[in-house]
Image (cartoon, rainbow, N blue to C red; front, side, top):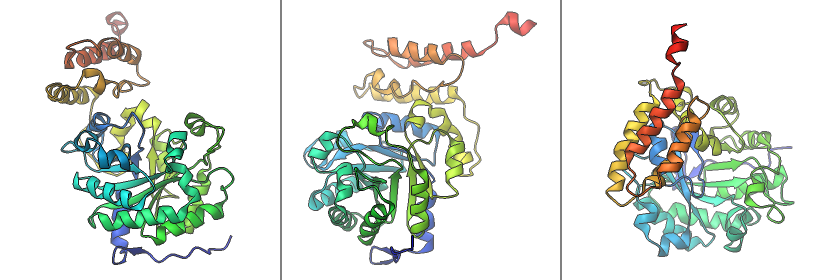
Length: 358
């Protein structure tokens, strides 16, 4: 297919420099996806203990919640957690602009528009993946968001490769072209199309086939844009393989269920050498965090539910999960429960004395 989608690298008030583009791409080489009910502030604090460089995303917050809800509860950003992107859902340009302005005021580095969620509730609210059929609406929203935030705050779009029967490469390119003309330079693309009728959100994560090559093609078609690949990537080895074809990779459930892979991200993805980190180091940091959060009324299980995969794939992983699951909900439970779980896991990993003596 011939390149019919020629873009000039425009940005706020002029043209995006090569330096600016390189800076965006370096920050997005590895990201952790926005995941509803998972990537809350406790989860992000835990992930930040594992990696300094990986970009973290919040759960999606609707414009209505941001404009009319408890903003401090929804948006408060703990010190030291950046870089973090706030994902918002909505379609009204004025509401999106105000929500983006509020998000930027809380210190988020990026405001991301959700154009990928296929749930019925999201469709009824006229946002999420359904907006892939309305590129002009998305473009108006993006333009308003860009105008509402300071120049150092990025505005991005997270979308699918298509929806229902609007699933051709040409449709994807036209969607990206229209939104890019409104000023968006950064697209996170889930490499599955979404079926808006007949499949649940869970089925939409697995049933439509992955098409990573479509996202690679999108980057070749729009080399001046920053394109981040999302969907079905399970390891840093896979992420590194894709980085030859796209600017960044976004991990989802793999990073949540096996968070220790993030401990290798700074070295393997960003090329940064650092002191070796151990799981014991992380547990000790988490224990201090738990103490501080308990003083604010946070229950232990609200934090440890995100930590269950810390020993994923290692001897003692089951004992670690079981101890947390059975004890973190108890009244008055504190960091000692996490430390006990760690000791159980690490004891299981040590060879017995009889074995060691052989």
